[in-house]
Structure formats: structure tokens, C-alpha cells
Length: 441
Image (cartoon, rainbow, N blue to C red; front, side, top):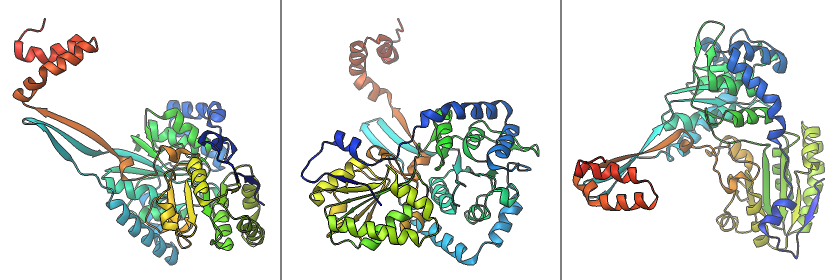
């Protein structure tokens, strides 16, 4: 089922690996011309445009954008008790992990009388997006809200698409998750129009003000991603997320049933999802192929999964050794990377590029999606080479506070003037020397 790339006996360069490895092709630029009119319409006409696009794209026109608080409470009351218990445990674990990501202000005494303090200040207001396409993602509500709350964000709004099956409201499980987290501002808005409304704000049909946000986080489809690109600068964004992806580095000790199940779990998300196996064992690759056929036929979303697994973004890469496999997965820089090898911890410790690393046979990606405590909003498309997943830091800004006394400034004045002259910016130097000469000429 998976195509094969045979790299045995070769040591491709990182540049070559980027061209030969399976990868989803997502051209955000190609849809910008479709998204720009949506963004412009929301800027010009606000909520009315958002509701029109909901009617067009989501096949339902909500009565209001903001979901009444009573509806959130009702969704929580009606939530399946087992799902509620699972969400509560997911929230508890996520809060434990994210609490340890808090930053603390630090003050450095550079010289006597001269200090630099780095203050960590939360973003004032954020918009958090929970997708509503092929699946329902209350887990994404948890993954976005918990780090924002932990960072100390005082005002946040969750956006999720209106559902025709639920009277123009977001899915009840999304609403219940918001209520469980203490979020009382939820907007029934999806896609590019949701990002635009978050950026520009507006007035709801009730006359209530929908205030704009400073940062937007959360995954979505290519149109939402294009809106993020267009509006970046007016708002901060976490990333331009593409289709989900999993890479598994495995050797002959791996259980092919486990490997296949994990590849399938990510293929289940989307026909464009990428599932990549990297192995030094042709026998394992053959066994995994057989398991993929068997398990896919027995699962619910088999057509979607087969499309993803047979696409150019998925495949098996054969390598000579696990060390060669490490070079491959570092070049690939997967959103999710599983290590299913002998001495998996040691191998995982050598990984440089991945959104998240899952170690050994009992740490599947599905655990991270829900209840590991880690965050599942992660960089895709090779961006793990330079970017991190969503965290408390996403919602914080570091501000340097410089506090020098007269003596401390005097002691370094000559050096400031010398550097200013070297850069041909004499007024910079004069801004220091005038404090001691009284001469601004």
C-alpha cells in the first residue's frame, strides 16, 4: 500500500533528502486569491459578511456569532460522562506539563547601577481556533486554551465553525470542552472568515461588540492558513499548519501491527495526511504493508485512509542502518516522530528535528493527541527544523527593561559614541553625550 524509496547503500545530502522524501504538497499561495475577497469583505462589512460566508460554506446561517453562555452550560450538562471524564483527565495532564513552561522575570546587573530586566508579559487577548471539518476536535480546544490560560492571558475567545446539524452552533462537544475549561466567549465562525473577524472585530446581530484579538492560534484547512498569512502582522499567529504527518523510525524489533496502526491513525485525519515509515528492515516493511491492508479494511474511515496512505505524501523509506534512518527523519522533520527501535530512548535522544518525539512501543501519537500532557498543535511540512509547537511561550512576549544610573551611563558613554560614529549615526552618540556636556549641537 505504501510506495517505497530505497536509500540503502546511499548517504544522500540533506538537500537531496528534502527532494526525495514523501511530502504533502500544500500551495497556500494558490488559494490566496480566493481568500483575499473573504478577508476584505469581513473587514468592510463585519458580521454580516461572516454570516453570509457561513451560509455559503457551512450551509447554515447562525442567528448570532457569539454563542450564549447558557448554551455552553447546557452542552456540558448533556456531555457523555465518559467523554467528560476523559476531557477532565486530558486537561489535568496538560495543565501539569504547561505549568512547568511558565517563564519568570530575570534581572541582570550588567554593571553597578546598570540593570536589564526581562519581563514576560502575556498577550492581552487571543483567538483560539477549533476545526470542524472531517472530525470534531474538543482536544484542540484543550491544547489551545490550557497554555493560553497558563500564560496568564486575560481575554480569550474560541472560534469553531457553525454546524447545520446543530442549528448553526459549533459542535456540542466543542462547546462542552469550552465550558469545562471556563471559557465563556465562543464564536460560531469558521475558516478564513473566522480569522478575519478575529483580526478586525465587529458588531454581532445582538448589538454586542466582538472585540478583535492580538494573536490567533490553532490548526485549520488551507483557506484558514491563507487567511493567517494575509493577516499576519495585524495579528500574531502560531504557525501556518499543513496536513498532519507521522514518521516512524523502526527496526526489526518493532511490532508491525503497532507500526501499521499508528500510520493509520494519522491517515484517518485527512486524505492529505502523511504517513511515513523509515526502516532498515525490509521484512518489517513487508509485514507493515500486510497489516495496513488488514487493518484499513476493518476501520471506519477506510476510504479516507487508503487515499492518504497511497498518496505521494506517504511511503516507506528503506535505509541501511538506524543511524542512516536518523539522518532521514531529521531531514524530514516530522510533526510527529515515533521511535520504535531497540534502545528507543537512546535513539530518541539523538533526534534534532521533530515537533514531538514518541519513544518506544507504548508511546503512540494517539496518546499525545489526547492524554500525554504534551501539546498536539505542532509544526508541519518540515517546519520542525526551525519552529516549535504551541506552548505557554506562544502567548508571552519578552520585554527588556533597561535601568541605568547616571554613573553607569557615563562609564560607557565613550563606547556608545564610538559605535555610533562607526555606523555613521552621530546623533545616536550625541543623545548620550548631551547628558554630560549639556551641548546638543
